[in-house]
Amino acid sequence: PFEVKLEKSGITIEVPADRSILEALRESGVPTVSSCESGTCGTCKTRLVSGKVDHRDMVLMEEEKDSYVMICVSRAEEGDLVLDL
Ligand code: FES
Image 1 (tube, rainbow, N blue to C red):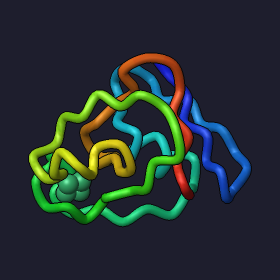
Image 2 (cartoon, rainbow, N blue to C red; image 1 turned 30 degrees about the horizontal axis):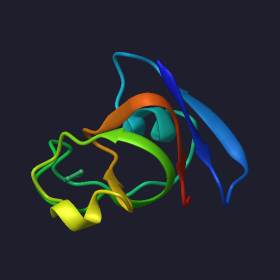
Image 3 (spheres, rainbow, N blue to C red; image 1 turned 90 degrees about the vertical axis):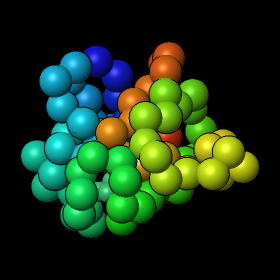
């Protein structure tokens, strides 16, 4: 498990090992947009403020990987993530 901190909302949500970031946000009542939920469509693209991401999507270009995370499939590589939500 790891935590995502939502910078604008000022809340922190735990992401269990068996949930995506997207699912954890949804279960906590945070509004999200998604479509494929398999890392291919690009809908759930979320701006990353800080943290090390384990990118598991097929969408992001190399140069986007420091600034964005596809929250339906990608996870924290180590530590926690801060998202611009
Ligand atoms: Fe399609 Fe995340 S919902 S890439």
